[in-house]
Image 1 (cartoon, rainbow, N blue to C red):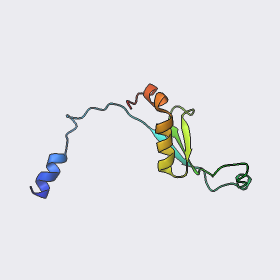
Image 2 (tube, rainbow, N blue to C red):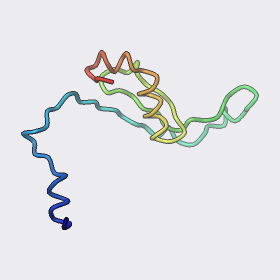
Image 3 (tube, one colour):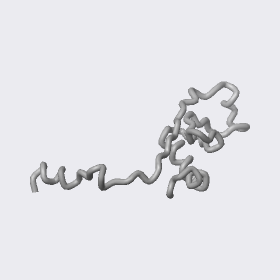
Image 4 (cartoon, rainbow, N blue to C red):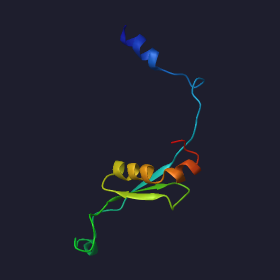
Length: 88
């Protein structure tokens, strides 16, 4: 099989695909750890990133990386995502 045939075998036209749901997530960089948060006996580790479901500010999670925040959002808010139209 040539590279052209391999590529064309993987391409799926828009006619064959149907949109099942759309999910819009906003990920924010909260910046470096503030001074008031550096006391580890009172606070846990600083999670720099925040992921939020656009349109529902109650559905949000913190994470140490953008991917971590997104993963936590999906893992911890399955019911809310299903109500928003996602099939998980």
